[in-house]
Image 1 (cartoon, one colour):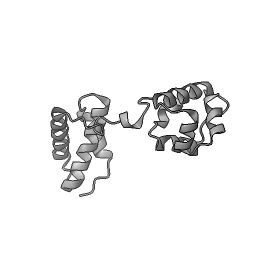
Image 2 (cartoon, rainbow, N blue to C red):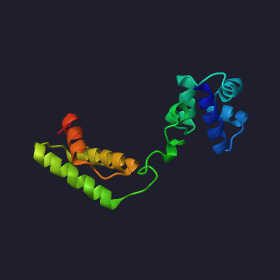
Image 3 (cartoon, one colour):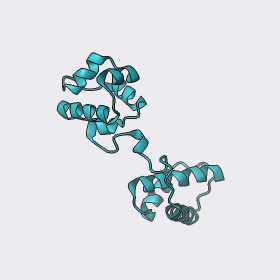
Image 4 (tube, rainbow, N blue to C red):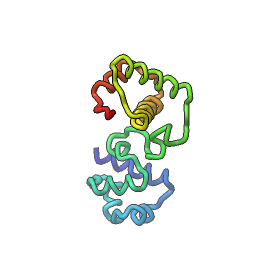
Length: 144
């Protein structure tokens, strides 16, 4: 496991075009500690992971190789990608489920809820599943 983390540490640092010294300065991680991580002699602590996250590195990628490598790549919505057809489908699905379940929500809360559902489906690159959205609506604490 340490060898995998060490390799990912090297890959992300090189991807960011940083030297070990510069990454140490930018992150606040002591240079010897960073060298140990890259050498497989240790692994980032929670504080170390927090420092990497502040640099925009996805901690899940470092630990488990779960994409994306950088947090800036994490959300299609955050990247400014907008899919009007998907948003229409999400709105229609949420409205239909709210109607079927007789749920009510203030407009601002509903907009935030819809945007959250949109982000989930946009990131997953799949179309909304009414049964899954229904489960989410039923389990969510909705404020009216």
